[in-house]
Length: 171
Image (cartoon, rainbow, N blue to C red):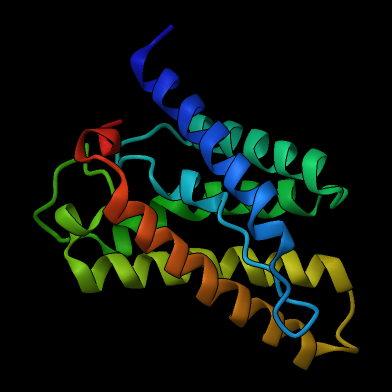
């Protein structure tokens, strides 16, 4: 098995455990919960194949749905994020960056990485909470849940990016 795939599977198991054991039990205002699994989709390098991003996004979302009982909302949101990830990475990465750029503070700079993380998590959470409510009757509650979930997920993403060993970011 390829080393990259091994690293991604190990990272998937670790973040899945973190999501299930901690994040699924956090409910801000009784509604908003941070979902940190999109972090895995965010960490794909700049030259990743579109098919690979879509498949990994689908699998990550499916695994999240199985363990969180969210009936396809995580799968749809993660797959969409996998589809948009190259565009977001191109938008926020430095112009002189290489094709194998792995998103991190070191490779993108603090401000660009924060913008990238916030926009990725916000897209994921907005889609997830819209699919959960599936109407515009409770827009304020949906947006509040998405914003609070995004804020906590970005905080956990920043902590993970700082605490993970630097060689763990090499994909």
